[in-house]
Length: 298
Image 1: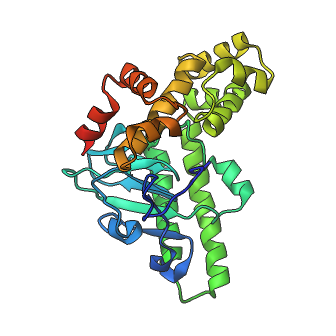
Image 2: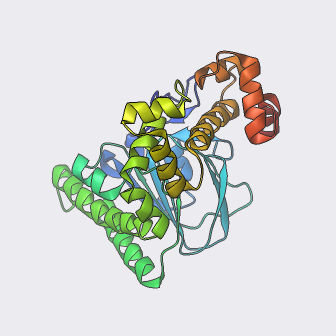
């Protein structure tokens, strides 16, 4: 579930989206693995210390910390042994004051087959980006990542087609471990098992810019409003309306942070044709006007 209208680094009306730089990866394959501190290789001309969007996966395994990293306007503090998983379409920002030490993996969407994508939960945006493995899990992840890096850097012993196949298998092994880690918490397992919430979450992700009505979602999914309220509250602790509003606010923040669109056009993009109504909605949920939010970030 990547950005529904992906842009490019030169977009004027959307958040600047930076693609995976295939030409900078070893052998031109769809992944990169290497030490942190070389982020400019895979961000090209991206402003690392400003909010920007990427259309590829990033997994960072830290060997030192703490590191504070912003993902979708939430601050995460990663310690040594922690991982951050940033998915396509999410916006993020590197810290100006923290040193990034460890290994970084970047992966182009489409590098893995669909069955692997589904098994590894590559697009589970409801899962937290920050993962904290215990000692045995960390050792296994480090070994899998080290093996993947060795295969990535070995461009001489196999032809490109076999080299790419080996990378896919090695990457799948790592991602299956990450998926198991992400799903091991009670909250993640509950959300994954809750079909009603999953269908609602996916519907909101698809239609939030045009549909803010809980009843409309319930009707479209074939549930009563009460059933939908119960499922969303069990999975998230909030009401369906609160869940929808949070998603709308997030997209508005993205647009305000990284475009020069007038406030009225930002509002229209998230379902508010009237700029005044959008400003009232945004201030109600954030405590700031859209103008104040944009000014503070910049």
